Length: 522
Image (cartoon, rainbow, N blue to C red; front, side, top):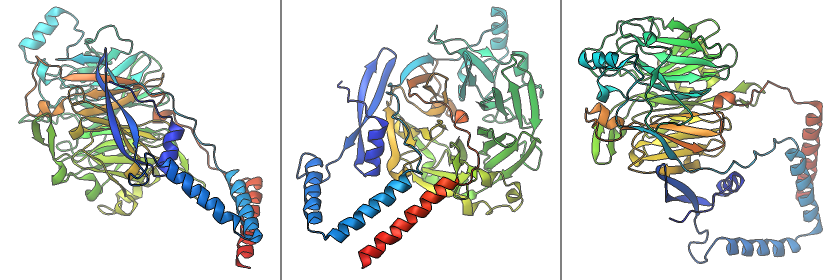
């Protein structure tokens, strides 16, 4: 089908600011890697349809303005000149606008599997695992994804029996469309029942220093009749730079987690002031955000029932004719680039959403770092939580890039979307891919070091209903070049006081403004 011209970021930003983008059109294309979609902005008429575009109306407005100005007194013109001088002085202190984003590629399928298989030590080992139900192919689901070096790291949470490894790798460079997974760090480090090994990994993050942060729930068989809570929920650190892949485990204390109900779902890492992880716990009875500080291995939990709990209206999911009820609490989480606050300090925004919700919420990282707030109990976090607004559907995974673009899924719409966080959430959401055949339950995202974004599609709705068919493609990894890199590589800012020159400019600007106002009132 016809491809619309790509829109540059600066053009998008201009039209967002001028409220010209009112709706979006989806254009479908076909590629060798699979059916994908690309979205191009549709510019609504600005005059209710009287003209073919809003340009002529804007032109008439400009002519009318010029005629009006020509009748203004010279003193008013002087005031306008002074105001322009003020604006120019203020503009000198503004940061330069971001350069236009690189040309986007459409998403394409790079990997797909009917069932997940592994690199076994021998064919006999595989047969042994199959015969003893330690490997049940339809019970192995890909959830998380991350990138480092030459590998993509994938997580396979042990929600059901028969998952032989919970963390594994595949190569970034594609040689097979359905590669076998290599357990990471090793087969023995994935031994079930060994609390020194990885038991139940839902997600991992890799920070800018090459440290992998692994969420290990400990409890296995969460979708079975008898979950096994033998091992405690922990965070595991692996220094990938050394190549030794040694695991450093830190179990969470009982005052922070409950071994029978805690579900460590997703995390973001903030490499400031001793390294922090902000972790979503979508426990059915005690949802919240767990904060882990690496420097002293201390952790605490903050709760907010209103923003972190599922809501009945969003608990029903309908995907391709299948309906599933999933009342799941706080789930996806993302972290913004650093920014300066009004008092000159440095902060970041933490974004999150329950799986069963249509809302996106935000809270300052500095608030989550305040461990004394966790001691005040329910309600202490409420004044600091901001409801940014509604999405078109529920969201599982989300991830932000280094410039503040949030990528997220809209599950019920079979959609991948993005939001430029410098724009109001109500008008800034944008569909970038939609396909009911290839985008069936968007889970996690990651970025590589070449400007590509990857996303896991896993048809989770079939998995939880025990309807996985090995005759169909159940898991896909999609890829698109966006020119982005992960939020972990965002710019590091330092607190600064206003330089003397800036103070002089502000004073001059204020003085000119006073003069201009006095002239207008004279």
